[in-house]
Image (cartoon, rainbow over all chains, first blue to last red):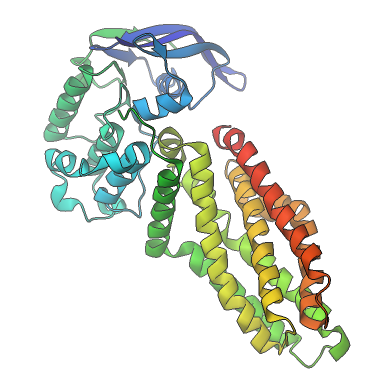
Length: 205
Length: 231
């Protein structure tokens, strides 16, 4: 069983305390929805879970069975898609996906990009540089970049942003597929995404 | 998820190729570095020219000018590798996907290629325009290569540090200057020797100094980079 456990997390920007003593956990096969008003710290919480920010207090532990994942293994085992994280504007859609695949999988990456791009209806746009894609296409590409290495843990921050019906369908399928491997933590206030949740954690202002 | 980690060299190569490909499309760093270098060269050659310097002082003065041009040229473009990642908000994505040491080595490789290209253009042009006659060409270019190697390693680490700060443009040369001062002074003196001294007895020690500087900078950078990158 793959699990994510966060104990007593606190974080502040300068004097402004964002949240204190947040405890949550998610296990393989479930989607944990993190809800809360704007400014309550949902995105920051996800960054802490990803190891991109260090909390003032508390800790986050990832388990793969009995093993605790260290930073190096977590880098290979974590996928994240967040509003504040961009793709490379000067690379094409295909190059972006191959870049993130090869970084994590090396030669094992093979031709994983093609089926993903086809599923997202982006194969015909594969040679377009990322900055020329529409915001919805870019969001789909970000989702694909987060899952190309088939991560054990998936963190999604408002993944439905700019997605149309077909994009939401893709998101739905990706989440369902990922749930078989490990837990998904989803931060969102979009009612279209509430249906994915198995459990809800609310962050208050 | 792979059971075996990707080799470090594969990650470094992937990162280098990404930067190189993006640079070939945008040409921001190459254009700014080359433009700065060529404008400075033109200014120096028109304002000082080859005939306004007394013959006896020519090796020392021209070596100093060449070192200054190469230093400021490197300051123009080398910081972009990390600043661009922060400004285009790709740094977090990269932090999640790549090992810190791979990021540093990939960026260093890119900067080394950039500086090698610029040096290959600037140095012969400078020698031509300023009529700078070199007595020991191999030693002269060897010193430049080693000095640029050390300078690029130090500059790449400083670029990572300043990428998270405000006032990036101003901070880069300010932070770089004290760290690069020893190598710049030494390079200037050694280039003058290679240009004018008839014997080469000083060369092994000189190469030792430059290699030690580059080696120290490399070890320090590898040790420090993870903290800087994840700060």
